[in-house]
Image (cartoon, rainbow, N blue to C red; front, side, top):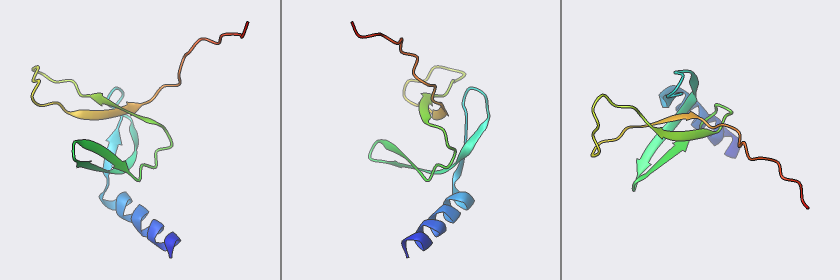
Length: 85
C-alpha cells in the first residue's frame, strides 16, 4: 500500500510539479512540488539527484519589498584539509 501511494505521489509530482531550473546556468535540474506555507518554502518530491541551494533572483530594479527566490546547484565544500598536530 505504501509503495502504491509513493508511485502515485511521484506520478502526480511528475505531471503537475514545477520545473526547477538553475538560476545561474538555466539548466533543468528536475521537477518538484513547491509549497510556500507559514513563511517557509517546502520542496516536495525533488528527483534531480543534486543538492539545491536557494538564491535570490536578479531584478531589473531593486525592490526590497518583493524578492523572487530561485534555486541553484549546491557546490561541494572547499574547506582546507588540516592535519592534526
